[in-house]
Image (tube, rainbow, N blue to C red):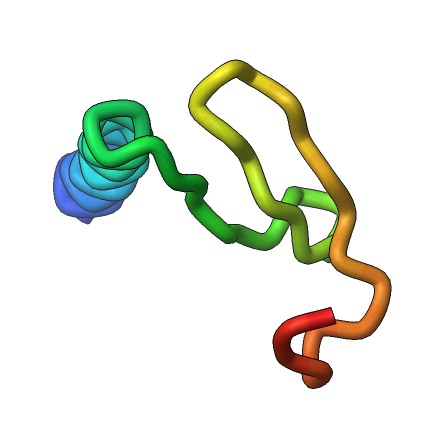
Length: 59
């Protein structure tokens, strides 16, 4: 059971790494939820911007 959890955690980590690479290649950003529950945009240059109102589009 523990190996499956570790495998899943590794897969999630690799998926995030791939998303960062794709964002960098395409000049865009990724959106994710931090461990503290905050929704953020992370740009290819490393800038992380909190999203204060996640339900509102195109501000």
